[in-house]
Amino acid sequence: MTIAWNAFTPWHAALGGVCIGIAAAMFVLLNGRIAGISGILGGLLRPVRRDIAWRVAFVAGLVGSPFVHALFAVLPAPRIDAGYAALVAAGLLVGAGTRYGSGCTSGHGVCGLSRLSPRSLAATAAFMGAGFATVYVARHLLGA
Amino acid sequence: MTIFISLLSGLVFGLGLIVSGMANPAKVLGFLDLAGPWDPSLAFVMGGAIAVGTVAFAVARKRTVSFLGLSMKLPSSNRIDRRLVIGSAVFGIGWGIAGFCPGPALVALGMGEAKALAFVLAMLAGMGIFEVLEGRALRRRAQPA
Image (cartoon, rainbow over all chains, first blue to last red):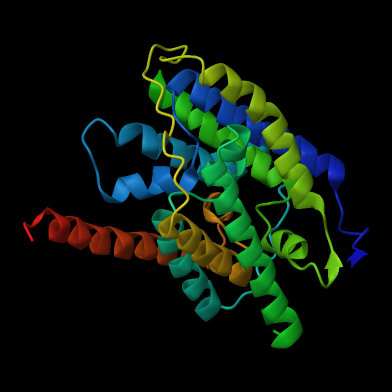
């Protein structure tokens, strides 16, 4: 293993992580809920009355965050290398997988690990492991 | 107030994803590529988030209502079953293919990326497929054997 020192951004990563932690903290301490993005989004597909507005508001905050960021600093452009076919396949897997496994990087990874939940630890190990394996196969065996 | 807090939480969460670099799939894949030139940044994102989260959830689990008086909805299950592990692994495969998980995909959508829109629509379709299959399984279980 070699470290990509030119790409490594520990300070920005930790600072951004603290923001994510503050968001999850605010959400649980004030609204009493887990800031799990797949769960919040998935709940909109089986709408329950009086349960829609806060979900839409959370998603609006996420989608609107680049606009707010752009008011204060130049927005970094994301690099999306995957083609459209791969993106659609990945989206289907992420959508179905997160709902079936009851969470994603936010719900299980951030909130679950913060709660010391064994269930979330198992889920995080499973998606991290599968992610490592997938990138290994795609980049080093298939050479994509 | 609840709706305002939701909006603000989503916003701060999204800013965290942008500042940390996690809204950029290339950066996420740099972390998932252990055999290539490895970028450990994502571990620092998780570290920063969990450091704050641990304190917040320690407070939250001692309470039955939130500071706004809403009921505390924390998961109670500790069961590690096939659904959890297989679902999470399926998610991990998709994450490894594109470098997108749900939050960063929504943030990249807000940046006006057409590719993020394709991913998000497919993700919603995947969630919809789950809802349909889950609804059918629930009905089947509800029927007397």
